[in-house]
Structure formats: C-alpha cells, structure tokens
Length: 355
Image (cartoon, rainbow, N blue to C red; front, side):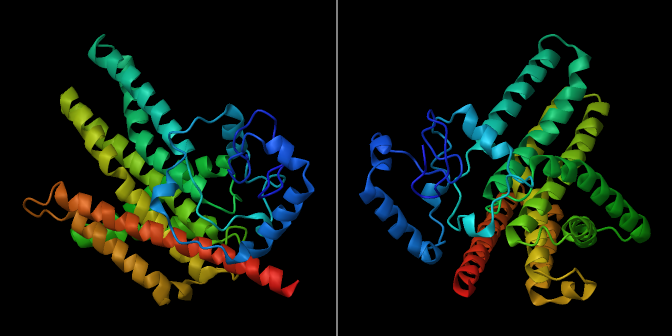
C-alpha cells in the first residue's frame, strides 16, 4: 500500500499509513493503479508548504480510541535512528495525532493495579518497591511519550529518551542539591522555583548542545525527558518517606496526588524551558549570553513564577490553584508546539524556494 500523501510503502494489513497516519479508504488498492489518482497526488503535493499549522484540538486526540495494529506501534518505536530519521523535506508540518501515550498509560495502570493488589490483598511487602517505582514513573513517562509523538522531526530515538530520563533526571536533582547546599537557610518558594528550574535548564543544555537537536520540538521533548526523570525520582522519594511513616494509606495517597498533578508540573515546565533553549540556539553553538535573550528569559521567569506559586503555602489554594497552573502550563506547551511546527514549515519553504 503506497500512501497517497507521503508515498510511503506500507504492509497490506494496515489501515493507516505508518509514516504520516493517513487513513486508507476501502478502494485504495484500485485507486493506486489510476493515472488520475497519480495526477491528483502530484497536485496535492504542490501546496504542502502552505498548509495551516493552526491547532484543531478536536482532532489532536482523534486516534486515541481507534484500533491500531502492532505494526503501527513498532513503526513509531524505530524512528530517530540514522536509517529511520526522515529528511526535513519529508517531515509533516501539520499537527501530529498521538495515540501511543494512552496505550503506555493503560499498561502502566494495569501493572500498578497488580502491584497494589499484591500489597493490599496478600500483604506481601515484596510488591512495595515495584509499586513505588511504577507509581512514580507511570504518569511522567506517559506524558513524555506524548511529547515524543509530537516531535514531528522524528530525529530522536526512544533509547535516547530513556537515557535522558534516567541520566538527566539524576543529574538535574544533583545540580539542584548543590544549589540548595549553597543557599542553605534561604529556602522559600521563590528560591525553590529558581533552583529546580535552573538545575533542569543546565541539564537540558548539556543534552541539546549537540546541534543535531536544534529544533524547538526537540528541545520540548528533551526538556520533558529531564522533567519526567526529575518528577519520577522525586515522587519515589516522597512515597518512600510516606511509607516510612508507617502508613500504607499515606503511600498510596502520595503517589495518587503527585501522579494527578505530574503532567502540569516538572514535565511541562522543563519542556517549556527546553524548547526556549533550542529556539534561541538555532543552528549556532550554545553560549551563555543566549540565555539573556527575551525569548528564553520570558519563559524561564514565567516557569519559575508558576513553580513558586505551586509551592506557596497559601490557604485554600490546593487543589484549585494547582489545576489552574496546570492549565496555564499546557496552554503554553501547545503554543510552543505551534511555534515548533511553524519552524518546520518555514524550513521546508526555504529549502523548496532556494533549490
């Protein structure tokens, strides 16, 4: 099956193109042999650089509840290598329609329920470490898969993302501890926001200094990976503290609450600053003076402000305040995705114009 939109050759049994996601019609086989179809395909390719990248939220999650084959999932997991990274001319600048993240969440949820039953019904403490680890990573990693599916250039392999989650998460926490040790008694919501967000920014800079990852969407993904690692390790630590207090209820409550708010916290904030870094860096090597540019400084200050409000001990702010901050964070995230897709459209137009 040759896709009419991207000319990718698919196996016979798939219903969607494994490259661009185009849905095949029932008479697609007959259409492929039609000269008229080939002409229509050529005409359709001409205005691709002028397609709108405006978000249509009713369509973004339209494939979550559709049936997908194992081949479609396998096709997603092999992108990002030297052999499977598409050229910029082949990248679609329209909004991706992610669906794999929902399957990842379902798998993590089933695993967590199994571990939960092992602890509650059978009182087997051997299930507790797995419960903490799966509970801490489930939502941050699910959110990260969403960002990975939204990375339209498809130039970062999944093994690289897993590497950044673990190494970036640990590195950012260690950097934050160094800053905390320097501040010592000057700890408050504002300094917490500055320390933790700056630690994640430094870690993201370490990973995006390679000019291979120069797109805004790359920074968004790598930032989310660092934030997911930071959030998961932090949740695991708080869950262990709750368990050591002698209460299983506190353990489950800690995991539940932090999982609910995980998408709008460290993951989204680090994604925003990561995207801002790649936006100011472009095709140049990173220099510290780039962080003074308004395009980065505005995002960083805003993220620190949201982090400080999140941790502020204000009466009656929980959980309404956190929900509002989550919504604000994701409005900015979708805005940054729009900027990233517009960047790809502009680069494709430049290549088409100057060739």
